[in-house]
Length: 173
Image: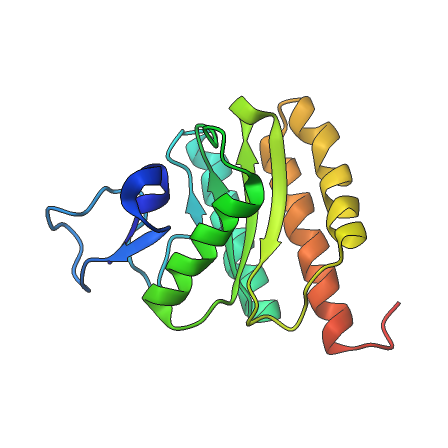
């Protein structure tokens, strides 16, 4: 089972592996094991209503099937002074230690920091440029400002999927 150690910044990593069975003492209920290793939507702050989380989980599963990337939607109470880059680096590092691959595509929301973001692991066929990343974030921001977090996340996933599709088919415009 992979648990969300990223909620506890002092835990030393984004994940810690606690075995294949759920329900142990380490099970936080936040990130349970499933076929691809980690929950599709990790929402410890309950930002999403159950129906929104279900829709997002379905959209993540579809994006994973289409692209081969392990998409994850991630929310947090706040970065507590840590940079987004450092936070996502810890997440990717924990992911790689737990799964052996750094193939996560993270769509991130931290309402308390007024922050949205996207991050991709080095085992994916894309490394978005700063300009490409900013273009995705710029489309997400107005939706998040309006409290439409589900739409912001969907927009982030679409942006990353578009980049993955372009990498798979360079002739695609």
